[in-house]
Length: 139
Figure 1 (tube, rainbow, N blue to C red):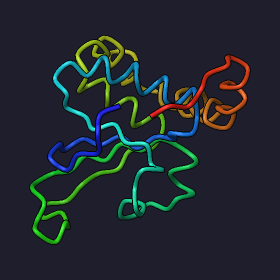
Figure 2 (figure 1 turned 30 degrees about the vertical axis):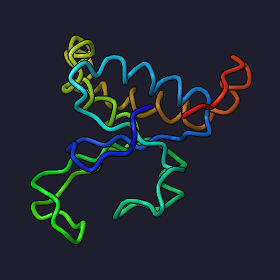
Figure 3 (figure 1 turned 180 degrees about the horizontal axis):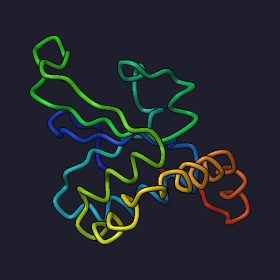
């Protein structure tokens, strides 16, 4: 997986100890043909990103979209947005060209309700899925 980077404005935090999660992130990283996203296993972080806890990061993937530039103190000057789970994936469909056709579906009214449910089920069962499919975690 690509290294933690501070220069990119889109950072996706995922569970690097989950085989299903790491395989999913590797597939998404392949779709990132312009290298626009930094893919970061949250276990590699020295502390959780601002406004998130370790429990938040363990429960779901998060996409952080930074607006503006970083100051010398590491704080964000212009602000940022956080997207959790399904909404993180939905935002990626706008940034990763191979996923853009999915945006037409995922942004339809009402789809987010089903997407939240499906994401929640997968997130809650990700270790079981990893064991069943014999997926090994590997960053």
